[in-house]
Length: 460
Ligand code: GLN
Figure (cartoon, rainbow, N blue to C red):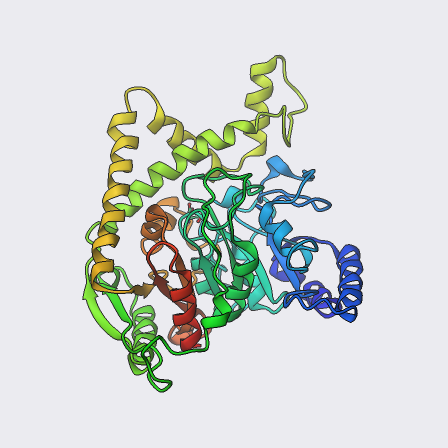
């Protein structure tokens, strides 16, 4: 813990952390030492972890990357935080990581508290919205961190920072205490160096929670117990024999950069050498995931963010004449431009007269996208492809919000379908991008986290 706190300090320029709880972490580390000496054998006991600042934490501020919640102290811990903490797995929380405001973004540049730099290349963004968590793990500031993924926010920063991250099936991890962005899509998950580490963390994070009505009653497997063994019926030299990996032709089409395609193809060759069979499949509605997601997510966000009214939480304007002006002024001052844009879009598509034309259509497309996957999983066991069409771009390079939205093309579908998705490091870009990591995405059927983690571990 002391060494990691030191690294956090020397790498403060990355902007990965919004809050560091040094004294409390050292106190917890000593308590963990004492527990270990007394025979406590929990595998994660005393190991440092950092939490994306979208999880509320007792004793540390929780801002969701927004000025609206600057300095906000929660009276309770999110379920995921509690399960990883002293009363659960025994991990020591070092602090809170930077993120796009209310998890809206793909480059971490939408944080009200400044951007995060990619530890591989300081000119590059770390991805987002869990950019602080991904950068912190990549720079070895912490061995593992929590993140959330609504449309790619664990997988895409993991890919751009060269770490491993898994977004579980919707409902596997409790959303209680996660500051809501789009509730039907938001899902928590771990980021760490390896699939093994992610498996260990997920075992501790996942599971039913009475505090979250969408959390699922599903027994959490001991993922780590099966990671080393070959697939049933396979031999140790071809441990993935019998595994059918589907390559959606829409994920390898126009728009995918050459350097990412090269790295992803090379990773797939490794899978073939491990015994997996590569099969061509189609996810025909892939392109529609962008308009569908960018209507559904803002619609839910506009509703979720109505609680920030200057009365119950966070920022309140100093000067106002009446209640309506107090609401308006507090929100005008507290929210950043991307959050306002989404509230406007969301309010519009939910409004009378436009609901049928936009929101309802988007929901129908969402269902069709889920059906595409059901069809695909008749032909394969796992879907594989790129996480992002490009390696990390330069800070300030993508000012146009639409350009940011389009870069989410390969991650949105799994979110809309509620499927688990994982990103594992697959290599690097080319030339000037030789230090910018590329991620390989693996998507599985609902609750097939074990299959993804196994495939990830066998590759690593
Ligand atoms: N980039 C997507 C967005 O801006 C996804 C973000 C996320 O998964 N939280 O909404």
